[in-house]
Length: 105
Image (tube, rainbow, N blue to C red):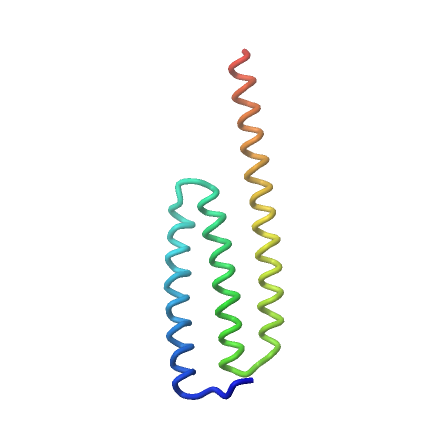
């Protein structure tokens, strides 16, 4: 592992702050997004940013087990996105079928 110099520590802390701001902006998009797809993409990006932040913190603290936590969180994030996409697709399909039934009546 590369030795953590004061410059590298400062640089990584600045990167963590930038990632936090980006995650906040994604949270705003997730809450405000006009479509479900915008919200799902924003939540997926927040999850990815959190994984990156955990990996950086793991490096700063020199604790390797946090990388395992990041991997687990990434897998859970993927699972949540797949489930949300499935629910959104099913909901869209049901609304489309309901609209076709109303037009035929």
